[in-house]
Image (tube, rainbow, N blue to C red; front, side, top):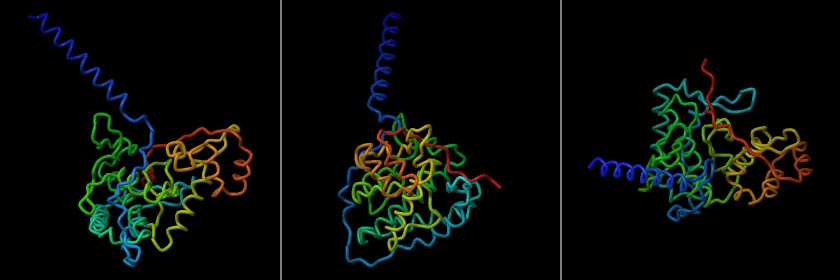
Length: 287
């Protein structure tokens, strides 16, 4: 009997090891980007709609908590100084957005809606688990190898349970097919494009997206040359398909927003690029 028991334990251990190995092999590689696969349910919109979504509460929250004067040019959030009342105000804003009949909005209003919802929800998730060193430490996504909060279904919009990844990769990226969206959605990290101190507004969203793109491309965490090598944000590697599909496609995209000195260096650059990203929390220093 002990021999049989020993064999059973060994077989169980081998089976568990095989399952773990399979899970590792099937899991997405670190830093791999989800594909942009449209969720057709969210294609519905009303081109004739003049309805405006009220983002004033988000404007007040951002104005009070986003620090824009850091010497390195990276916007930071004063998570540690958010009062219970301010948390409640953020939660109320997200609840109000969830209640909006989004299907009845025009496309620009929907774009601003989804970007602002994504960013407000990201801040809300960080606050719910604060203090953390990185948003990747908030492992609330389903699955054994969960990394971060992005696959957790966090809210319900128009009867559909949605995650942050759903908003970005099943709604924003595939429906608008605009690479500038990457400069607007913020993942609460120092390496990410800035969380702006004002909401995205349907009436001027094109100019806002252009401004966000210029700010990131011309900041060292977006694009820089180090020892003669081109180093770009890992966003351009993870989502290369959105930026032309090749290294040269990425460079052509960068040239559309680069300031003259950087643009000249990019034009002379004939090779590929390295990439880097800083996942540390975009947290303002406590005072």
